[in-house]
Image (cartoon, rainbow over all chains, first blue to last red; front, side):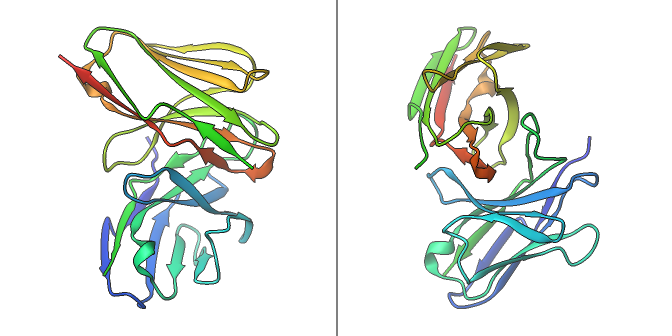
Length: 115
Length: 111
């Protein structure tokens, strides 16, 4: 069964450093998403991406964040200058479309720890 | 704004039935989804409702009342492996096609 994959599974970085989180969505899916989950808190939407551009973004997704689809398979989230409060699990998701019944399929996540 | 409420924790016994409630207040509504999340893992899709009524899927059923802003997930014949968090997520019109997640309900299944 096709699945969303993410690398790395864990990332430890120093405050102020740049990190790039990588995702490979399901191959026939057209819509891609990033969510984050701070430990013990709810899953929060960051950004959605379609046709090589951002379709929606939340207030969390400020200028420190960017997304890119550098090739036909990868979808990345970059945090330019990490802060302590960026420590969280970051989930990538993808969906075939955005019709009402379309669900989003989540990757296993990248656990980011900023020291 | 968007607001989704779920009980924080529930406990049930193996073999029993448990109902996990979700209430929502969103500007626009375009479907309600239930996900299961084991600790440290990704959410996995369980069920979806857009019309009022009950959707059954094996041991899991989900109910929706749009007029009441209410849904529940019913788990039958509980197994130990059902111990997980259950996330209610609403797709709201004015939030694009993205999900607003509730806080999740942590279910513990005891022997």
